[in-house]
Amino acid sequence: MNFISGTYTDQYQLTMAQVYFHNDGEYQDAVFDYFFRKSPFDGGYTIFAGLENLIDILEDLSFSKQDIDYLRTQGFDQKFLQYLKDFKFTGKVYSVNEGDIVFPLRPVVRIEGNIIEAQIIETLLLNILNFQSLIATKASRIRLVAPHQSLIDFGMRRAQGLGSYHASRAAIIGGFDASSHVMAGRDFGIPVSGTMAHSFIQSYNDELTAFRAFAKSRPDDCVLLVDTYNTLKSGVPNAIKVAKEMEEEGYKLNGVRLDSGDLAYLAKRTREILDQEGLEYVKIAASNQLDEFVIKSLLEQGAPIDVMGIGTSLVTGNPDGALDGVYKLAFTKGKARIKLSENKAKVTLPGKKQVFRLRDDQQHLIGADVVTLDDENLVDEMFHPFETDKSLKFPDCQQEPLLKMVMKNGKRLNKVKSLREIQKYSKERLAELPLEFKRFDNPHIYKIGLSKKLTDLRNRLISEEKRKQ
Ligand SMILES: Nc1ncnc2c1ncn2[C@@H]1O[C@H](COP(=O)(O)OP(=O)(O)OP(=O)(O)O)[C@@H](O)[C@H]1O
Ligand SMILES: O=P(O)(O)OC[C@H]1O[C@H](OP(=O)(O)OP(=O)(O)O)[C@H](O)[C@@H]1O
Ligand SMILES: O=C(O)c1cccnc1
Image: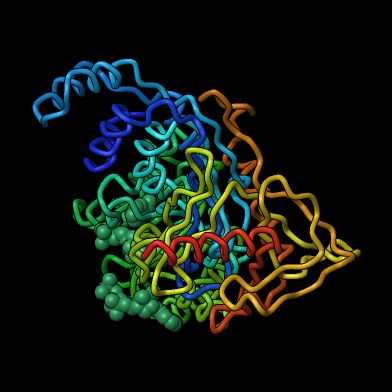
């Protein structure tokens, strides 16, 4: 689904674009960087997600007649509206691979091209990448604590409106197996899965009749919800009856779902009872306000849960409302540009840049990415981004360039990657990151350094701007 038009932006982008159109439209050399300042959940890494959707949207971005008519009512002038009528994104996009682990302060995506186009796309780029990266990161934390369980996204009903559509996609990138979201399944090739609601059981006069009706209709994928009345006294015994009846028909009950109470205790008791009845193959699914901390605790308690359904906490990125990614101008009109701030951490990195990931001679990550100017070759020293008298030498490191061109002249350069490919890649990249960066409490800080040339450029621009004040 791509319902996005050029109006999927903040008004100020169009207001600025109109000014650029009348004064600076010929400048084709704008460079903007997408980066964020803090990994979510006080974690030690972020999973980058949303790139394939962004490329699709940029390829199709336009203003329809209806958009133009609407913008006319908003006071935009005729010549600019005429320009918007034929608007296309014709720029270049350089990006980290979708699914890669990324860290604060260093560019994740670089947009190059006409300043009008690059400005208009700011808001949609942030909207797509910030949200999906937040949710993919949350999903990956849940996957870290539950490496062997099936993880299903149940979040659509609790999501911030239509956000659930992209949340379901991002959850797969972060390591989930399936989603209950049918439209996300249709559009993104996500395996769609589900059980039954309490309302279904309530609607019958008794639980057993409800279970039988469901099993009859869906015998090859039947998971029975066992907590509507009493999990151990009613739900599980009734599920056992139905499982035995299904066996007679040549089917196997897929599972039972626990959705309230002490999930560790109930899962253990349910497992024992099912096993005593020779139903070792029946899986136990659990849901009810699960997140990475509850799941970790349940598994530490030895809860024999095979499938976890996770809703609210996943798709809302609880407890973080958003990833704080920003989009900042780094170059235009033949000059590197900088944004100053009282807060050293908010002074931007000027110029067209590349990012290298460092590995030792055994190919192990050394826990640092270095930002260089784009025309620099390999460097052997990096400087602290704020305390520029601190530096680190790394003479024998392997350096992997992370920003690769993915769009040119507004067109995608590579074939579309499937979600499974992106998920697999993400898993491999996260596996490279040592555990100390992945722990939830006070994770080790991944270093970001600047090359000498970039540090010098930034210092020079800071001095120049300060002299003007
Ligand atoms: N053994 C356990 N260890 C840790 N956390 C658990 C355990 N069992 C359940 N939880 C979590 O504790 C919370 C219990 O919430 P709550 O008290 O609202 O559930 P409930 O009363 O059992 O269910 P409901 O209100 O839906 O009937 C949930 O987040 C659940 O996932
Ligand atoms: O707890 P979450 O992680 O957000 O997971 C989603 C929840 O949504 C459903 O409950 P709901 O009460 O909405 O419907 P139901 O009657 O089908 O249980 C489901 O049973 C889960 O408990
Ligand atoms: O299929 C389910 O069991 C399901 C789907 C959405 C939310 N809660 C449960």
